[in-house]
Length: 193
Image (tube, rainbow, N blue to C red; front, side, top):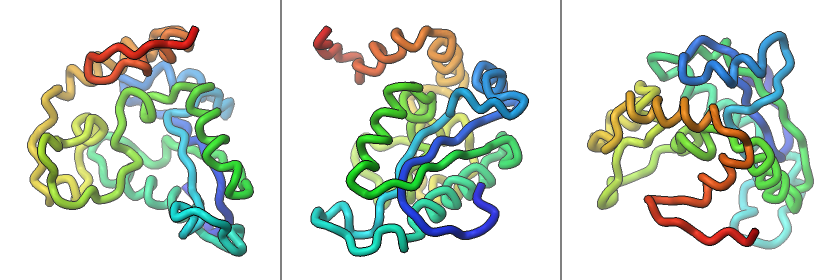
């Protein structure tokens, strides 16, 4: 992740190249420095932008660097991932284009950590809410202290079930992944096509 601090806001893609079995198709597409398939896409907006209105000097923000460092800490904390197996690309943008850029990248690549195994990008979620379990991501990549400290109950899906779902998901053509993404909790949503 970023070796030196930098300023700016925008979007980023994280690429995986390591040996974690479930992500072999991703690592294969990213080998030899090709970086063709992100495992995760995210955004970093300037502080205050969520309240609406214009933010003065958003390019003086360190939001993008801070976000990438947060992700690096999450990866370092796991018991089964190595930070050296991850790479990133980022694009500095005016804050008005950030949500559009992130949405486009997610729809274009259907990254597994955005679509199938959410939880990587979360910060400490606060007090346990009803029906809140350990995230899918933390179930297959244990180790983040805040998850353990919250005492969240285990996810209803086992790590083996989640990994099996990842294998199926990554074997699908991109068009099929987009259709699957329309289903949430077993409820089918209408597609406009």
